[in-house]
Length: 384
Image 1 (tube, helix red, strand yellow):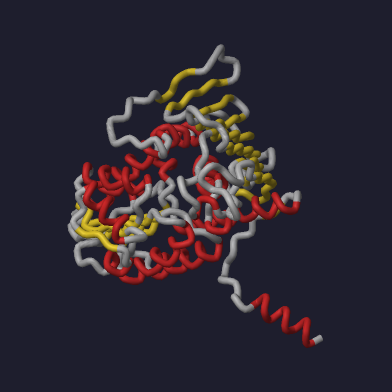
Image 2 (tube, helix red, strand yellow; image 1 turned 30 degrees about the vertical axis):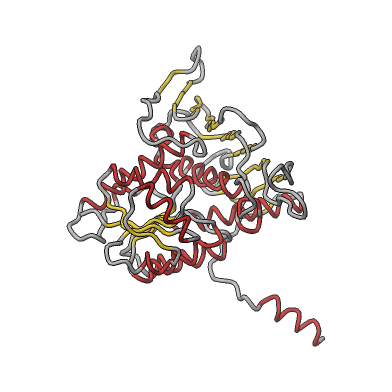
């Protein structure tokens, strides 16, 4: 039986997600927005019967058993942890910090019977599902290098908000790079051990953001990752990622994996391959065309991936009669909260590297840091 859905957020993802959920048979009962007016306008537009600006009204709604959270990263942890504590299944976007991610992991471990997955839709894109299968089957031989390029227009909102602030989770690295970091782990079956990165903010003000306010989130990011070398004679996979959001025009999304016997490359939603010694690339998976809702703010790979994720959710919940029960199989490829913690740890390591100019190790926290640690150190120094 399909659960009733409550959606947090009124941004571009929510505008696409709700029609996709309804198309798969889900009933969307409630919508949360930062203001009553904002929530009311979108609820009327999308035909959602209940809207609110108070989070508990959605979480305690008697018909809501699945919560989809697509709000600013700084608010994600609070809603996700509370939703799990109330007994709701959760699909959510990334948190703002590794500490927030760790708190989400702790809650997910405490309620293992509930669905708790991150909303990185690229894992569900058919091109990447096929790419991973071909990598497992040895199409490229031993994986050696991954090269990713994502180019597009500015990620900034029309007014000053969280997308402008690096500390609130804005910027290309956090917004788009986190999905790429997770995708590369999914494709290679390995995790980053060390990283080196460079972040820049080229557009600090524009026609709408000016005066005393300045953008601190990155619009250009380049980073390298040395992935775990378990079972590899070469010591692991070398990954390079370039994110540039100063390029108006068509969106570029290319992921290439090169190995000892060939290469695979996903361009947009299509997958190509070439073996060593062959004359050229072969099309392995074409684009069958998109017939769902369109939104210029959401690139086609993410849009198609979101649609595939919603289909997987339907298959997962339909397998059980109880509304809150779900089957692992259809959503087995989805990133867990544990994966979300790993991704956020890599993001923060890349930021440290950009400041230090050095390679940084990726060390995933195993316990929540003491919030009073720095205060205790300061007191101890003063005492001495």
